[in-house]
Image (cartoon, rainbow, N blue to C red; front, top):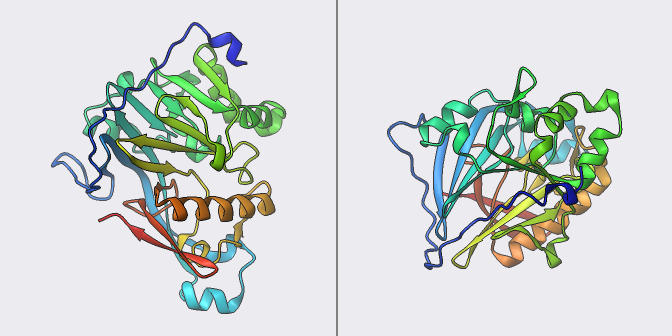
Length: 294
């Protein structure tokens, strides 16, 4: 599916212009602890939608040393999560990834946003823990949403029938509202829709992409699976994970993008960062320090 086949669909995000930069996490009474939390980036409201929190074993990490693990994860496990994110930007509602679909729809309802009210879905990539909530019984679960997918990701999953399974089913279910694009490099990022830039973060998958939202002078980079094990990969970004299709490329992009967000003081959020799953990055010698939002 090429962009030329989707010219009949017009999508806009309107970002208010008031300069509000304070970021405070808050929960409503209807939201369960560690399931949903919301915070402001400028005038945009970002909500983390937790699909689950857990500890993972370090056996799936690549490039560690015994000394490294003893220092940073002495019990042999690290905090992890599966998250999606919802962004309310002006009169548009944007979902970034869809998790397993385990808690997704309850979480959306707790925010007063049923699936029918989601205007746009942006996919970082098409692993099952990012697209599971997009279909049920082979049918689209978001009836009114335009689906944005990086072209290299589309090519990867559509190019192999055995590999493509669930991803191909999602593409088929949303084919009439599918928008393909090529992500930009961070230092030359371009908008794919107003207020949102798609930034290449290749390596975890061939088309893995993060999304940079900007409002009223504030920015948040929702980086998908740029990291899986923050406790290890912040001090040692050279560590990869067995889920990476191209570990060397994943490491290179992780180092590049960590440097980018640290230098530019951009708030980040990630699909596998433990709740509340967002915060700020600061360079610390060869590694980085992550401070969660409070």
